[in-house]
Image (tube, rainbow, N blue to C red; front, side, top):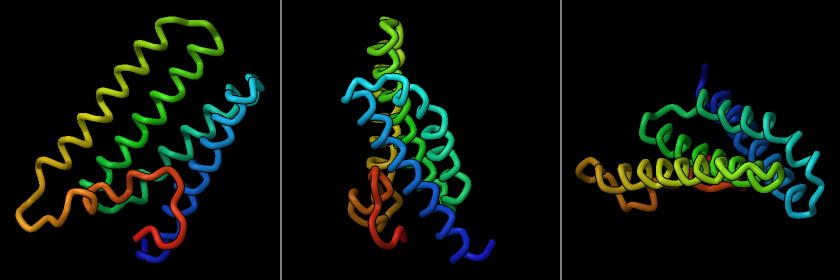
Length: 132
């Protein structure tokens, strides 16, 4: 797939995933629990679809860290809404996994790999403008 098409699709899935994530969290905060729970699958699917269009392994690892953040959020939210204590442990596991991925990326930079924040530039929930 040509780069402009790949970039457009990546931007679409990342933006869609971020907007759905925002709506899911808003449903939870506003205690419209059925909306929050209903948005779990489309939010997760959109964020996972972004992986297909990330061209570089290091950036895929960043996107996996983002998905760990999402999984942590989903487990915490579902545990709160459904009253399932074990979901909080799942949230903690995804938190540790996500941080481990980020630390791995920061501390295993190739020589001349640029500043740490450049290696983690995909680690944002809502991207505006170019997704480089």
